[in-house]
Image (cartoon, rainbow, N blue to C red; front, top):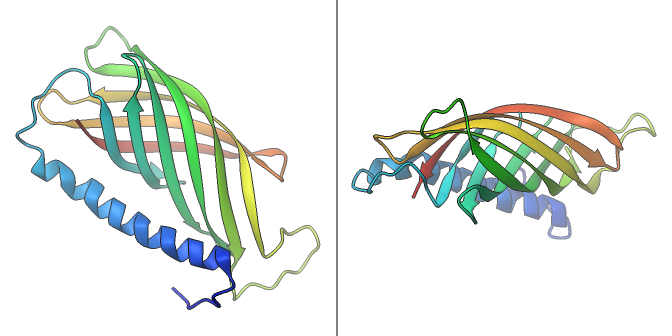
Length: 184
């Protein structure tokens, strides 16, 4: 990653979160290998993993009751013109799907916030483009299906997560994703 002028706070934050994202991704991928001795049940308390799709990231889910959970997602992005990160917090409800043990529908809503920076090789060519640095925030919804393996401390899921980001004032992300989590 290019070096930054110390006064460029967003660039420094992007470097910080990109490094943390890479470390968390490695931990999330290799931690399940060390978890073979865990007692296996149909439910779990906490899950840590990766979200794969057009907005990949690190995901952490924590159940606060038997059927409700909070989920956090960190997404670092590199687009043709911008680099940035987004942190999303969701509240989710889980209900059994198709009367199959360990298979659950989940649905919920939440908020996101982040920052972006214009890439140094991009020139702004119109007034309709965002500023070179900035923040973003908005609302999210989610609906998905998650399966917890009986033979390993893992869950697999798929979801659809539309979001509305301000200042654009439009439905600008219709995200579909798959996820895998190590659960304990």
